[in-house]
Length: 182
Image 1 (spheres, rainbow, N blue to C red):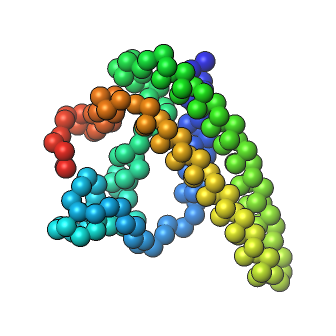
Image 2 (cartoon, rainbow, N blue to C red):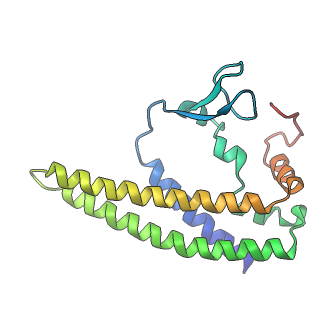
């Protein structure tokens, strides 16, 4: 039962990711992610604010992939992680809630997207109606992303620092420990 639940959630997350991947890539957006020289990708040195650009997120440098743990990874590594019964129960409960939520959100996103495509098929387009429907699509996409991130945050918060280090170590291509800051 455990693997099936994780698999279903992984499929739902992938569906949302694929839907987003069909969108054109954004131009270089800049997002402030912290101050000084902490961990993460910076765009310079010194003590000023560190900034992450969208281009830095490409080619395996995705800050979300580095800092969060997908449910399927935890499922694959549950023996190595030595998850407690309480952690397993928590993950199962959160995944069940997320699964129901993702299903509803995906249906809403699909419905709003279809409405937008229907409006776009007309010979003469009603700009106000299309832009209003676009806002509904974007809101639905935001809700999906918020739910995904909420789940990832809850998963990470329930893992011990040792378990997080095990996951960090196992997903590195060379699987060798690296000093902090690399």
